[in-house]
Amino acid sequence: MLGENGVYTKYQSEIMLAAFFNQHKPKTVKLTQASNANNGYQYFTFTLATEQTNYRVFIKIGVGNNNHSIEELRIDKN
Image 1 (cartoon, rainbow, N blue to C red):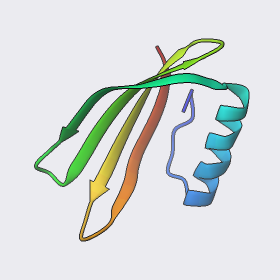
Image 2 (cartoon, rainbow, N blue to C red; image 1 turned 135 degrees about the vertical axis):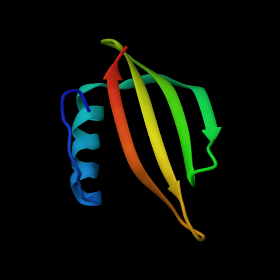
Image 3 (cartoon, rainbow, N blue to C red; image 1 turned 90 degrees about the vertical axis):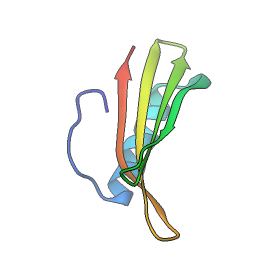
Protein backbone atom coordinates (compact mmCIF):
# COMPACT_ATOMS: atom_id res chain seq x y z
CA MET A 1 0.00 0.00 0.00
CA LEU A 2 1.74 3.11 -1.27
CA GLY A 3 5.27 1.93 -0.67
CA GLU A 4 4.49 -0.57 2.10
CA ASN A 5 5.31 -4.18 1.40
CA GLY A 6 5.07 -7.11 3.75
CA VAL A 7 2.95 -9.72 5.45
CA TYR A 8 0.62 -8.33 8.10
CA THR A 9 -1.83 -9.70 10.62
CA LYS A 10 -5.52 -8.93 10.32
CA TYR A 11 -5.19 -6.36 13.12
CA GLN A 12 -2.18 -4.63 11.50
CA SER A 13 -3.99 -4.56 8.15
CA GLU A 14 -7.07 -2.97 9.71
CA ILE A 15 -4.93 -0.21 11.24
CA MET A 16 -3.08 0.44 7.97
CA LEU A 17 -6.31 0.56 5.94
CA ALA A 18 -7.99 2.86 8.47
CA ALA A 19 -5.01 5.24 8.31
CA PHE A 20 -5.06 5.19 4.50
CA PHE A 21 -8.79 5.89 4.26
CA ASN A 22 -8.60 8.62 6.90
CA GLN A 23 -6.03 10.42 4.74
CA HIS A 24 -7.62 9.56 1.38
CA LYS A 25 -11.40 9.90 1.61
CA PRO A 26 -13.06 7.79 -1.11
CA LYS A 27 -15.36 9.52 -3.58
CA THR A 28 -16.10 6.60 -5.90
CA VAL A 29 -15.06 2.98 -6.31
CA LYS A 30 -15.51 1.14 -9.60
CA LEU A 31 -14.91 -2.55 -10.25
CA THR A 32 -12.79 -2.73 -13.41
CA GLN A 33 -11.94 -6.44 -13.56
CA ALA A 34 -12.94 -9.68 -11.85
CA SER A 35 -11.82 -13.21 -12.56
CA ASN A 36 -12.00 -16.70 -11.11
CA ALA A 37 -8.80 -18.56 -11.82
CA ASN A 38 -8.61 -22.35 -11.73
CA ASN A 39 -5.83 -22.13 -9.15
CA GLY A 40 -8.15 -21.51 -6.17
CA TYR A 41 -7.97 -17.71 -6.28
CA GLN A 42 -10.27 -14.88 -7.26
CA TYR A 43 -8.84 -11.60 -8.54
CA PHE A 44 -10.45 -8.17 -8.45
CA THR A 45 -9.24 -4.79 -9.67
CA PHE A 46 -10.93 -1.53 -8.74
CA THR A 47 -10.45 2.14 -9.51
CA LEU A 48 -10.67 4.21 -6.33
CA ALA A 49 -11.18 7.95 -6.76
CA THR A 50 -10.39 10.29 -3.88
CA GLU A 51 -10.32 14.06 -3.64
CA GLN A 52 -6.54 14.04 -4.14
CA THR A 53 -5.95 11.40 -6.82
CA ASN A 54 -7.01 8.07 -8.30
CA TYR A 55 -5.74 4.68 -7.16
CA ARG A 56 -5.71 1.18 -8.56
CA VAL A 57 -6.76 -1.43 -5.98
CA PHE A 58 -5.87 -5.09 -6.54
CA ILE A 59 -7.27 -7.85 -4.33
CA LYS A 60 -6.35 -11.55 -4.52
CA ILE A 61 -8.68 -13.80 -2.53
CA GLY A 62 -7.90 -17.39 -1.65
CA VAL A 63 -10.93 -19.66 -1.93
CA GLY A 64 -10.91 -22.64 0.42
CA ASN A 65 -13.38 -25.05 1.92
CA ASN A 66 -16.24 -22.76 2.94
CA ASN A 67 -13.93 -19.81 3.63
CA HIS A 68 -12.29 -16.96 1.76
CA SER A 69 -9.22 -15.00 2.81
CA ILE A 70 -7.46 -11.96 1.41
CA GLU A 71 -4.08 -13.19 0.21
CA GLU A 72 -2.90 -9.92 -1.33
CA LEU A 73 -4.10 -6.33 -1.30
CA ARG A 74 -2.36 -3.58 -3.25
CA ILE A 75 -3.22 0.10 -3.50
CA ASP A 76 -1.17 1.98 -6.09
CA LYS A 77 -1.44 5.49 -7.49
CA ASN A 78 -2.97 5.43 -10.94
